[in-house]
Image 1 (cartoon, helix red, strand yellow):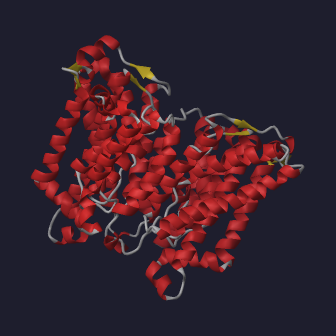
Image 2 (cartoon, each protein chain N blue to C red):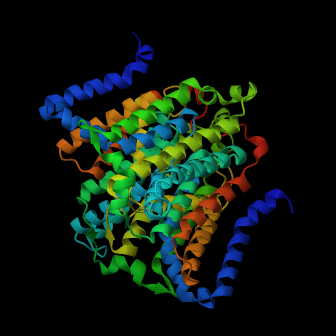
Image 3 (cartoon, helix red, strand yellow):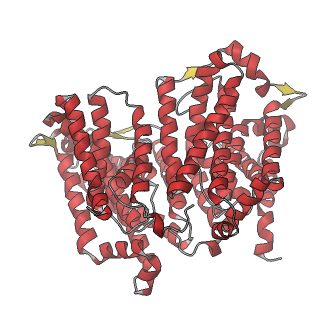
Length: 313
Length: 317
């Protein structure tokens, strides 16, 4: 068994090992109720990571996801009263539109995706500050409960967030594995020049990937806003790093083409377990950044496909 | 006027147009007092932008500045306090120590990027998070205050109306210009940025040049950290925040091509001035400041679009 054959299995082996180690240190960890709440807490992050998966799958990156989620927490909160349940549709469309714009700028004008998404993130941040008046805003509790309360309630002890996550995972998995879009995204990630040569409209499918990423980041923001019952222009800060880490430790390399949304689920669970153990060891959120930064470097170094990078810039 | 010439001078023209625009709306914009205020805001950003210019000229990018500046500023404050609290005495040692540390941090950045063969935008972004985390770890989330009159003179002492830190920043800009134009290392940055395989083929040790470039960037981030401390009188884990967006925007808007090989530290200066004039001008004429990030985002995209020669780019990630 050599390393190359082991590689696709590394993510879930890592996850299993981590769970065993953490439960040895902290026996309470395996308690089903606490595990469920642990998983439910990570759902907004998971949704964002699902979106970023599409951007990374084609060999790009989406650095605007966090700003997008920030913006949506504000938009959803401000428009909840006037738009009712339609605000959810509006937010997802808005996210998709911003994402599509990143994709358009990247493909039409040859602006690298990390710059175009950074710039679009700046625009989203401005919108959030403008709509919120630069402070945190809160939802009308009665309206929230009536329209979106179901998102955060439970059935038979299972938080509904987990079902939302499962449905989204299924949808994304379907897009990735069973549609023309998914096939073409894989072709682009595996080799963009070959994809162009075989007649795929690369620009269109890349734009779709960024639109999906934006829409999912918006959904993450929406769920986060419902959980917090409000929003602020920087409330989701701190999501971007663990979301990217989740995608990469799950086994979707920065060079794209392999991995996918199921890998991201495993990656997100790895992040969740690491976080839980850090909480147990009383390491606070910002210090975790340091650790996740190092994990990010290790994950990229392990997964990246160097055959695709003639020159590493 | 050829396209090349137009592109070369476009940033300067934009800067002049902006200055004329803001002073037409509010004549106070053109006052010495306002320019002094502008220079205080621009000095640390200029140092970060100059540092990252070297990297972008090589065709790479360094996104670690926020964490690096925070961590270095915090370390400087602790060293200064430990060494007696004043740069008039033993505390002066804290300045070169911080600059050396900046070199070291940058070199680590470069080594991770080169040795592990990770694209620089990701390796440096991750290192930036590590830096912010380290700053939190050191301060425990608190603020480290500095009340050394001599060090704060960088902000309080004025020459010809401008604070001392503006001259310090200008001095380091000249140093960067000398490195860029009159040293072998500076030439090598352009060689690597212009075409890495060619540079390699003609005997340039590309890996070494890359590591040295990142080390140099770290050095300038350290200078930025010192100026931030002088400006704010304190250091904490958010001392460097927002510098990433501002500096990358400045460098790109100033006319340094993301593809490498084109532009230099003077472009960084023009870019920082454009961004600072926009920030400052919007406040002076009374436009809410939250529009800035959005406007800068749009400007960046336009700048990259204009500076890209699309015939020579096969595809872009």
